[in-house]
Length: 436
Image 1: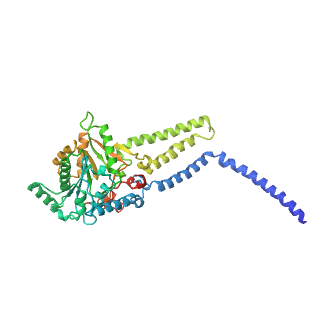
Image 2: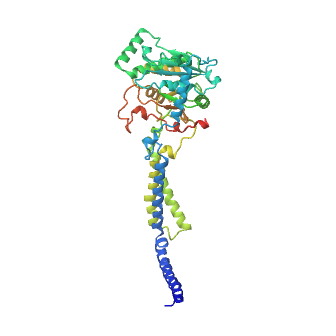
Image 3: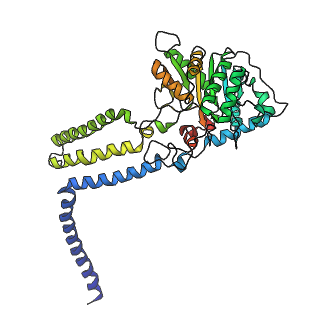
């Protein structure tokens, strides 16, 4: 064959091959994309569904109500580490005798903290530091800080002899009680009856704050951390709550404003199963209606009865299931504001009572000597139909790794964590000092 004939032969046969391949492609295409469009749609749905699962595992690992929750990353401390450093620096400065002490002038809020000595870390230093660090002079003058050393022998508490305690607090409260009450305290300490003693301490401190004449009384636990700017946010939230339900007004009284909550109990709770079922059935029904309407006007040959059936019985339930698996906090994010929280609020890390309501709390606790303080208060609120408010996002974080009341590991513990460690607000860690 001549060299020139090779060049003429090659394009000719390549063209013939390309033409045959094109005919084959045209013959195959209808069988995949036109003759079985339903199967193609379900394949696309499967890929999209797997992609959504992947996205959920990436985006919702901090949601404790989600099936994609990752405790290793979810409980990671971010903002609280930075805030704790700031709080401890404040206490170090306050430990100096040269630290200026602000005298309250127009007391608007009494902050009560009952603290007990712990075997390891004394969280109360960070608690007090975070509550005071960042306050303006005017804000500090409105706060009366009342710290109860909750020991019959106060020198047992490691902070009792530290200078900062007397520099920053308006009152270091000790047990000034009758001999009978003091003996009860001694027996509770000896028997490690933490619950009875905790109820007494709460009432005792609450009454002491009442005596200051403050309009608002904040009861803060000694293993919490406050966000920068917590005080003006709390005052604003209290005023909003009081505007909606004025204490002593015609409407139902409100009991407290919650400064801390944990999202763990705000998931798809079984008490609301009927609403979830109704909504799920509604989604499946709407899917069927949409399929019939689209078939009526557009894809009347493509959308068959089998297609609609499989979509309603397989695809729609799968999407509904993924919605619930993604978690309530992720699917229904908590918007900033003040809201009623009559259920699922935990725990007693930070309550603010009005001056009008606090005496009723003291009287209630005096009649019940068994149980946890927050459970007693919640039970009473349910009986008396009292409104309970929460400010979102949380103004406090629980940083205690071990409970001062015992029972660190029990039925409520999981992820190889103590019960106290799981009392956590995940949204708190998303605070950013640049925007506070």
